Amino acid sequence: MALATLSPMLLTLKPPRITVIGAGMAGSDAAFAAANLGVHVDLFEMRPAKTTPAHRTGSFAELVCSNSFGGEGETNAKGLLQQEMLLAGGLVMGTAHATRVPAGGALAVDREAFGVRVTGALKTHPNITVHAEELTRIPEGVVVIASGPLTTDALAETLRETVGENFLGFYDAAAPVIDADSVDMSVAYRKGRYGQAADYLNLPFDKEQYERWLEALTRARQHTPHDWENLEFFEGCMPIEELARRGPDTPRFGPMKPVGLEHPETGERPYAVAQLRQEDVRGQMWSLVGFQTGLKWGDQKEVLRLIPGLQNAEVVRYGVMHRNTYLNAPKLLNPELNLRAHPNLFVAGVLAGTEGYLESSATGWLAGTNAARSVMGLGPLLPPETSMLGGLVRYLATANPENFQPMNANWSLVPTLAKRKGEGKKERRMRAFARGREDFQGWFETVRAVQAV
Ligand SMILES: Cc1cc2nc3c(=O)[nH]c(=O)nc-3n(C[C@H](O)[C@H](O)[C@H](O)COP(=O)(O)OP(=O)(O)OC[C@H]3O[C@@H](n4cnc5c(N)ncnc54)[C@H](O)[C@@H]3O)c2cc1C
Image (tube, rainbow, N blue to C red; front, side):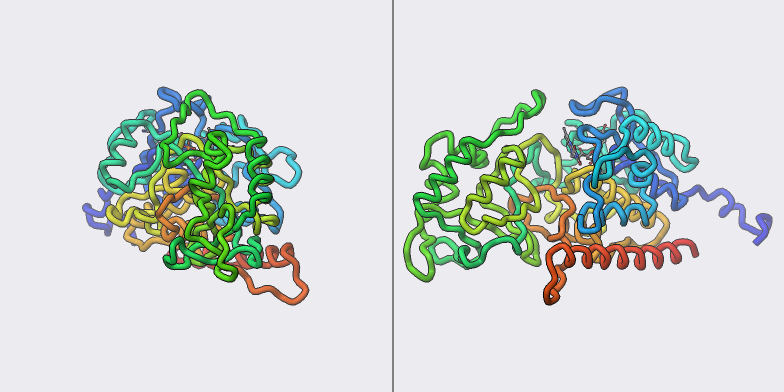
């Protein structure tokens, strides 16, 4: 149609707009995805004028600690998410590949070159206006909130007012999460305390096993928290190693109390019990009740594997104790990453309950895409459940809200494939990897074709 035949009203129509708060891992991908769909983005990033205790530069998507996005191999859950973000044209993943440095089987980057490129791509994008300022209130309209684990106090307070009691944490006190397949079910038994519903998996200790485990626990090394984290724990949220320091019997009079958990076959009461509680709807992930811990990951694994029934445990997510700001996603979020009670507000990154650079950028891509689609009058997208991103966002929306802790990419997030005869774990993971990549690619090509119409 010739321009002259368009009505004057249409000619003056402005492009739809959204706001993105934070140009970290999630906000950078959110802004880029939305801008590439033709939507105008107001991107607010307070650094370098005001900084956080962990950031050091004014670069967007600054890598605050390690320079790695995780393993790449075709059996690796992070590797699958990396592939999905490459297929989707994610800014962080594309830039990571362009600035990579040798790192064995992992995707690591030259942090300075990476930061310069991400910042340049956003600052020069014709559809993005960068505002170098802190936001303390959530603006009107469609907004992606991606202000991260160190969200400023004023904005955190606004968020708390918006979502009420489901605002979570100023720190993580997370217990390790175990892959169900790796629990020895000839040792574990299902039972609820005092005859309540048999929702828990119980791992019984005899005296000797308990003492061996306790000895390893008291020997294990702890992460050293940053000064600024200044963690003070509530009594009810004490790390397991701190309980052990208070006395050898303190854990077994606390979270490892065996009372009411007699073995269903023998009727005997164990000396102590570690309990596993289901974390996801499919029952593929189980967390250790009361085992929040700040132990170094290598030492943590050793201690966990001394728990009867966990001798081959695969840790899906290690326990951590550090400062963090995030929402209780299962109580608040749709899998499309907007708040159920405020559909115009999208959340991404650590704030939405993910953990890790890669996971943050991937949820940023989805939140930015869906925010843009909403102002374009299009419905939200949800990647297939067999893809890592699809599995992750479904987990956020449906996980157990009690004690919810941020989650990283792992194989328990996607439906398990049935075992083939003679097939090992490696082959099964390769099939899950191929399935996820293929499903994501098919889905994304359909979406892109429709968006282009
Ligand atoms: C100390 C520390 C170390 C970590 N190390 C690793 C690691 O090695 N590997 C890993 O995979 N993950 C790590 N993480 C976890 C997490 O994956 C990263 O923090 C990741 O950067 C989170 O992405 P994000 O987009 O949610 O937040 P960020 O990347 O932190 O981005 C949030 C952005 O919002 C800005 N901002 C905050 N408040 C406001 C406001 N009110 N107005 C405007 N801008 C605002 C911040 O300046 C920041 O740029 C670490 C976390 C912390 C705290």
